[in-house]
Amino acid sequence: MAGYTWSEIGSILAMQGFSGLSLFCVFLLMALGLAIIFGQMGVINMAHGEFLTIGAYTTYWLSHWAELHAPALLDYMFFTAVIVGFLIAFAVGYLVEMGLIRYLYKRPLDTLLATWGLSLIMQQTFRSAFGAREVSPTLPGWLLGSVSLTDTIEIPINGLVVMGLTIVTTGAVFLFMFRSRWGLRVRATVQNRIMSGCVGIDTTRVDRMTFAIGCGTAGIAGAAFTTIASTGPTSGSLYIVDTFLVVVFGGAASLLGTIASAFTIAQAQSILEFFSSGSMAKVITLMAVVIILMLRPEGLFNMRIRR
Image (cartoon, rainbow, N blue to C red):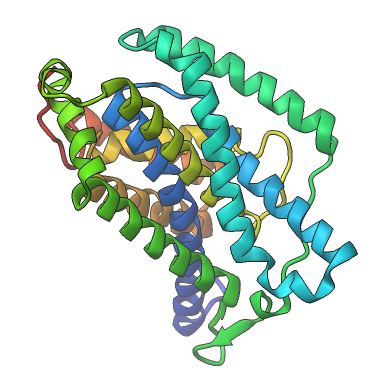
């Protein structure tokens, strides 16, 4: 703090706050999918971070292909990658639920071990396919640069785009869960699975599609992730603990809680990094969240569920 004027400190904190917003967007996009899988279905998916990696590598591959074969399409690559990343992660998630997860419902410790093993397999697959070195996609020109708010505060354009993508995705998840017939089936299955089956809801299909959509949302997070960091085989696993922390702290099965929790944790980590190291910022944030959860185990928001 010594050597800085109050104006400089204010500018640095403002930049750290916006950096926290970029981190908040990645946390929220990851946590939205995990809130669906863990909060709604009770499945501990330790491979959720690898679905982010799928979206990130999809963005890298599409940008590499466009750069070599169709440079004119590079400007449209990012939004194409968002859609394709969602579809590929959705398809992989669908197959994972069909071949693995459906045998492990109501066995949370088994799902934890099985999906942890799956995450190791996926990481090795990424390493074999793309190599161990981290890669970055070629971003279109309109994603580069920044917007100057003042003489000392500049907002990166890619951060603004990621924020817009996060708002659209969050709105889509809200409409899917609370304004659609399929969302009604999902919530009915969560609240009372046996009764939902009795009234004709195909709970097996609901589980499969819900898991796949949660994985697809992580694929969108992967596309957004490429705008702020490089991608490696273990990139997704670096965010899995923070993502679970966001979901548990916000309250499982609560969309509003997930948003509030992602914002609080991301901003706390980003601003604390100004006063200490990145690892110490994570430690302080984790300790604060643990203390709050000891006082309020259900999280910031909770939903009563009948099994």
